[in-house]
Every structure is written in structure tokens, then in C-alpha cells.
Image (cartoon, rainbow, N blue to C red; front, side, top):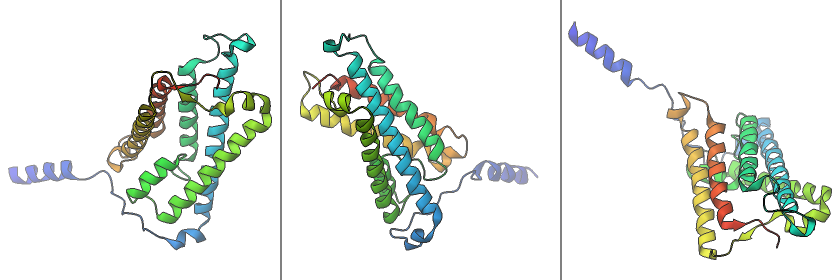
Amino acid sequence: MAKDVESSEHSQFSAKDYHDPPPASLIDPDELSKWSFYRALIAEFIATLLFLYITVLTVIGYKRQTDSSHNGTDCGGVGLLGIAWAFGGMIFILVYCTAGISGGHINPAVTFGLFLARKVSLIRAVMYIIAQCLGAICGVGLVKGFQKSYYVRYGGGANELADGYSKGVGLAAEIIGTFVLVYTVFSATDPKRNARDSHVPVRITFADIYSNTVYFKIFWLGER
């Protein structure tokens, strides 16, 4: 009797409450005949477009409000932390909206990492990256179309290394920041974790805010 109880308890605690998905095929031509595949591409395109449109406008607005030649002050605008929250907030909204459609990658680094982990096929990875790049181009194109004078004046919201930091430090910051983001995506989408909660957008959001907060300390957002 005691053995039966022990065996029952052991089976109860050892049972999995998740399922490890099989690795994706390297090349899956069947995806090209599915509407869900193209819907995912559209979702990635629109998400990346909106992400670049809002974030680049935020950076340009910050530069405008801190531009001393236009009566701006160092304390004007949303500040560096506000820009980081703009990036993180957009990631939260877009991942929440597109996670069920495309997986909410919104970043070629995320797509490439998931491809290396056999989470997506080569065809899907390549098409996602193309859609993301086109979305980014169109998003920045909208910024330039609506705010051309500010876009040209402030270099399209581009940044440069702050004083005292070398190019090597900048490269390291980019690598570490991207690693933190991709690592968080992998952790948040792990089937073992996903079975217990569903706060994926929240985790990715705070990873993005953290990365950008550190990133903006190294890269200067001042006027070129």
C-alpha cells in the first residue's frame, strides 16, 4: 500500500506540464502555401514600421527640446530614461499584439537567434528579416516625410559615441545589449516557463528598457 502511494506521488510530481516542440525544419517549402505565413510577414512588417516610427520621432523630439540653438535646455524633453521607456513601451505593445501571429520578433537579431536554435525554418527566418528591414525603412521614411526639416537637422535621430568611449566600447555595448534582449526572449518563450505564466511582453519590455538605459549612457544623442 505504501509503495503504491509513493509510486503515485512520484508520478504526480514527475509528470511534465509542458511539451518541448520539435525542431523546425531547415527548409520547409510548405510554409509558402499557407496564409498564416504571409500574415506573419505582414505583422512583422507593420510592427517594425511602428517601432521605428515612434522611437525615431521620440529621439528627434528629445534632440529638438534640448537644442540650445532653439532655446532648449539639458533638462528639456523626456530625457534619456523617457526614450528608453518609449523603446520598451513600444516593444510591450507590439509583442503583445503580434506574438500570437508571428511570434513578435520585431528584430533581426531575435529572428536569427531563434533560427540558430531551430525554432524557425530558414525560409521563415529570411523572410522575417526582409519584412523587418522593409518595415524599418518605411517607418523611418514616414518620419522623414512628416518631419523632414527636423529629420535633416538632427541626423535622422542617429546617435554617436559619447566623449570618453572608444569604438570598441560601443561595439561591446551593442553586443551585450543585443545578447540581453535575445537571452530574455529565449527565457520568456521557454515551454517550461510558458506553461506557468504568460508575462512574455513584460519581460522583454524590461530587458529592452534596461539595455537602452545603459546604451544611452555610452552613445550620445546630442546634435551631430
